[in-house]
Image (cartoon, rainbow, N blue to C red; front, side, top):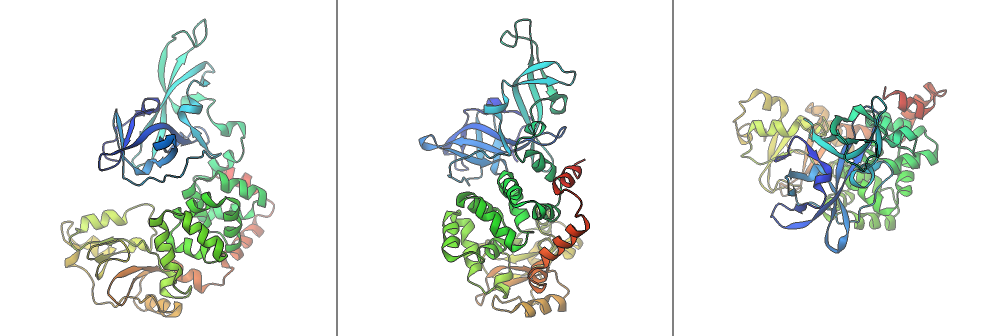
Length: 433
């Protein structure tokens, strides 16, 4: 995040203006949303509550904030105008944490004056410091000594400590891989599974849904309410969202697509036009795409993203602008090994592999599998008859469709049989220690 200070005291953000990249004010900061976690790990900052026109409060993810200054917040221009509703797993800093009586490590009661968030090397923001006031002989109202302490030096904030709702389970889930967490969610009783799904944030729930059997996906989506379900579908990969929506009745599918942001719904709608067992139906619309004048160094930076599927990170696709699917003319592929061998200033246009014919969207699953096997690839470009890149098919999606339809459930049931005497929630909690 450019322009970010090393520490921001959250109470000081209240009321400051929020601007888009063009410099137009869209609203003012009302509060900051954080997710509490098991002690001593500090809360993770999720985003800002911004008051826009007509006093509507909306949510601005912290990942979309590009600059935080003393008198302004600037974001990347993308803002969902749906009214903000706080979820069970979330805490409002200004509304719920300030003025609260907590305790220092030695048990001394103190009042919270402010909390500070700090950026990490992974671009997350964490609450790392707490400004507190000591009690005087007349209580906290009279001005006692103020001090700033580390988050792990205080006690009394976390809802986890009081066992509220699914918060303890959610906090334990955070360090687990999505596939492992999906196993636990699959084994939970239906009522508890719904509680956990409601409490999880959109991105985490999206990751888990992508790993669950189809029946679980449909059940959970149905428990969320249509607006939340649309948010979660937006957070899923377009190909996974299309697969899930394809299993729903037409009326329900169309309702959810209408509630999704148009730029998020558009690639999903395109994918739904292709047969399931075709390259078009298998592909993702979000491969790593670069223009011809991008350097090797810039391309390598793109495939280093920690959230990128390893199969998608194995190559970049070179296209003339526009570089969002469907792109301008497709020029070819550069594999990551080639990028590693070339000097950083080299342009990708000079090292592109243009000899391999791309996949066509109408190609069958078997033809796609043979193509990847023949050329020892983990992904392949899907290009239309006009030479525009539509997406890429990865080996994991091919395997997903070649295996029996119930393979995920079979794997989970086999895992459950090995651990049938264990409580899934207890296993999740112990996994955090």
